[in-house]
Amino acid sequence: MATANPYLNFNGNTEEAFNFYRSVFGGEFTTLQRFEGTPGCEHIPLNEQKGIMHVALPISSNSILMGTDVPSVMPQVTTGTNISISLNTESEEESHKLFDGLSAGGKVDMPLEKMFWGALFGMLTDKFGIQWMVNYDY
Image 1: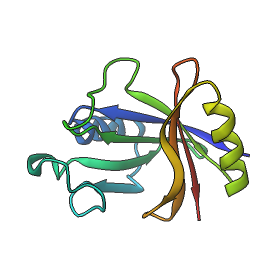
Image 2: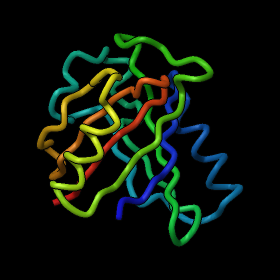
Image 3: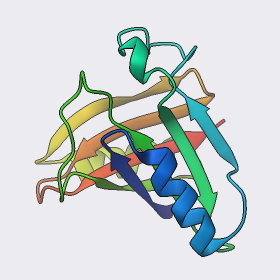
Image 4: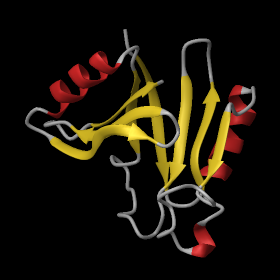
């Protein structure tokens, strides 16, 4: 069964926000990856390379708060586009089933594909305007 976690998008202040969340929830980041040196991020302006590509902060035994900076070369987020639901699945089959089901009548933002970090990953917006991320770690 898939688990669901909130994924927050920021216009350049993810590190500040997540340091705040860490002060509230406690704990440590399990992941903090910057754009700098990451495959596919060469198009991001040099002054944004130290931005956060992905950060993860466990906030309970079952929930992880995750986030990213949205580079200036991409549409900036506003209230309503600043959060996605991230589904972590247990198999490729479950990933495809959920991705295909949720994207029906909606829009695929990033096709479900194998990624450099060792996962099957895709993003979509469903027909109700809700943003989803589907991830299966190999």
